[in-house]
Length: 120
Length: 110
Image: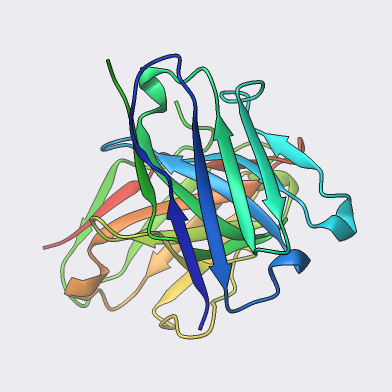
């Protein structure tokens, strides 16, 4: 059974940093691109970025809204993807989802999400 | 403002059919056969319903179907059931190696 479990969310002040983790089981993590998406309260889904598998260079792509502030990384030995969020803003408040990304086709396995609240 | 345009809401009675549109541009929906649709119930993670415009993952009811014409993709749900009431999001791969989503459509089963 595939499991995707995000963690690390919480309340953080504007301008501070936070790192989210995404622990995966049930498939060979290192073979796949992983994406992070978010959903602000009452709003739609927004893709944040992805990290390709090592076979495709392990490179990353980001949405313009987070480029330069957020960084995605991975540890294939632990089957974990990370989302490092710096210089957080109130508008970054959202539920953050980690998904398996079958670019360019679709996202199939999703975690339950972790809530990040940016507020003073 | 979302990159892809969806109606904010649609509604239908049990047994009826509804269609949700998703309009993009030639650099996303119109340029690729990689449109997907996701269903999201309140407080839950999104669930893949359609991929590559018209393909259903295993386990998804054949009441769900997808199509595309030009820069507009569509999701059709036939034989509406109460459990179909949810938010629906379209998504497309785009020319800048990024993903774009629609703003979501709230489906109400009357």
